[in-house]
Amino acid sequence: MNAPVPGQTEPHRAELEILVGSAIISFSGVFVQLADVGPTAAGVYRNLFGAIALVAVALARRDAIWRGWRVLRWAALGGVCFAADIYFWHRSIHYVGPGLATILGNFQVFFMAAAGILVFREPATTRFLLSVPLAVGGLFLLVGLNWSDFDATYRRGVVFGIVTAASYAAYLLCLRGSRRDRDRLPAVSNLAWATSITAALLTIAALAGGESLRIPDLKAASILVAYGVFCQALGWIVISRNLHRVDASRAALILLSQPTLTFAWDMLFFHRRTSSIELGGAAIALASIYLGGIRPGRAAHKSASV
Image 1 (cartoon, one colour):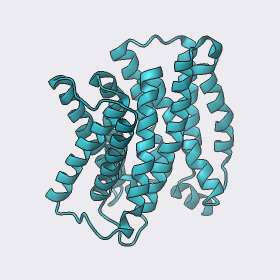
Image 2: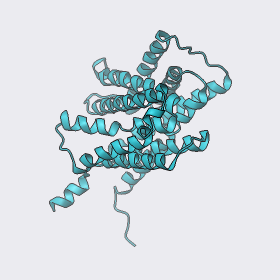
Image 3: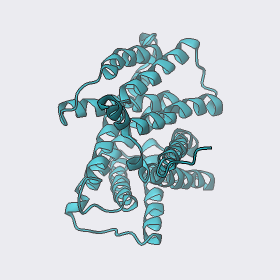
Image 4: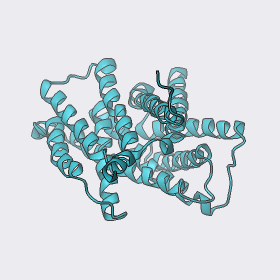
C-alpha cells in the first residue's frame, strides 16, 4: 500500500471545509423567510450579530484588529458592496423565494469573469463563452417562459436578483484585493470590519426607508442571532480561511453547492411549487454557472507543459 504523499491531504481537507461552509450559508434564505422582519432589518441583524461573533473570535485568537485606515480601504469598499448585495437579495427572496433568489445571485460568476477579462486581462476560456448562452437559456426557463404572466413584484424580484449578483461579485473582488495587501489584517478581523460596515449602512438604509428595526418576539430574535452567527460568521470563516489552499476554479465549483442546496431547502421547507420545466431551467442555470466558473488549474498547466 502506498503511503500518503505529504501535502496532498491538506487540499482535500480544505475542499471539504469549503463545502461545509457553503452548506452553512445555504440556509441564509431559510432564516430570512422565518425571521418575520423586513428585508433590510434582516440584513442589519445578520451583519450585527455576525460582526459581534467575528470580533469575539478575533479577540479570542488574539488577532490584530487595527493596522491603520489604509488597510481598511478594501474592507470599507467590501462593506458597501455587501450592503448592496444583502439589500437587493433579501428583497428578491421576499418576491421570488429563497431558491430562485440565490440562483440568480450566483450569476456573480459571470460578472467575476467579465472583470477578469476586461480589468485583469485574463483570457476568455471556451467554457466561459459556451456558458453564456446556457445561462441565458436556464434563466429563461426559470423566469422568462411566462414572463408576461408574472406581476410587477415578481419581475422586480428577478431584477433584484441580477443586481445581487453584480454586488456579490464586487464584494468578492474586494475580498480578493484585501488578501493581496502586504500589511493586511487577518481574515477574521477583515471580515469583522466589512460586516460591521455593512450593518451600519443597512441600518441607515432601513431608517431612511422607514423600515422598522423592531424584533417582534423571542423566536424572531433567536432566528436572527442564528442567522448572523452561523451564516455570516461561521460560514464565512470556514470558507475564507481555506480559499487560499484550493485552486480558484475548484473553490468556485464547491461553492456552487450553496444555490443547489438553497433551492432544495425552498422546496423542502416552503413547499415551493416547481414544474419540470423550472427544474430543467434550474439545472441548466447551475450547470452554466459551473461551466463559467471553471478555469484550468495549475495541475492542468503543468501536465500540458510536460
